Length: 361
Image (tube, rainbow, N blue to C red; front, side):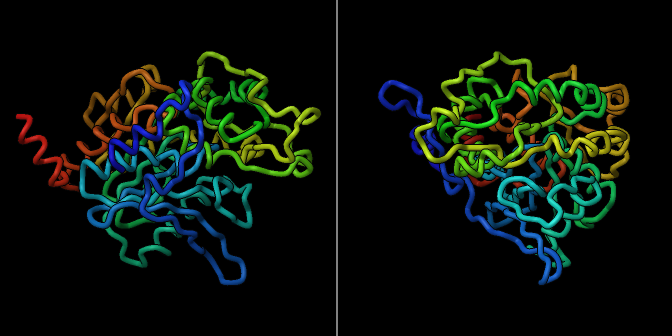
């Protein structure tokens, strides 16, 4: 996508910021629904692809989000290095349709990743770098640890640390109670996400919120659970923005539809502990090049601190941002990932990038 297009997406309209949603087509080359399992009982996973050569970056989003949370990052990374991207909606998230949508065990979700890759690339997929954020990062670690994808050559975990994650589990219920249950429109949801600090990058919010909420009729919405979803285990301490003008009021709603969260992760509470317990040591035990990206140094726990001092993985702390690291700072995350890929000779810099760097020297 050109810089002019990116500027247009985030421009002001009539002196006000434009909070209207943006299509995935601005960032990915194609979208596909992948069938997994027996013909009579298939699960269907929504995936998005970009790039045509180089290693395959498999992107796993955080809890409550979708593959669209990687949209802006995808543009940034494919502009820097020759690579392919496959971003998938995890089970129960986005537009994925599975039989057991409430099974969030690490074993099942790791198998989902392997099954989708096999369905797309057969028994001999290209070299794969698994990149996961939050819960997706934990699933990436378990997927590598279980060795279910033999061609995996690298691992990138974004803002997922066992110690801080386990501590944050106790704060989730407070987050659930404070989050709006519904919105009047997609535009209102996008504006809320930015002003509340859940996603601090307007461009990313305009494409990724489409994967977090869905339109439903008022009658249908009334039958849904009233608990809101958990976006991930790290609860932000950002400025509150619970302006009721952005939240649907069913009694006075003039429209016939509301926008509700696509997934209620409060029902997955029994899996929360299993997602993160033991992930630090499992991450350290993965015998391949690893990169850990953090939103703050305070996230680091004891095991990872020792491992980092021993040089067992690369680590980078990004500039101040929220937990949605790859959304808040997509360019910086892309720079870090591109450097990791080139250092280990997984991918080469794009010709345009090399030319630009030569001219600047």
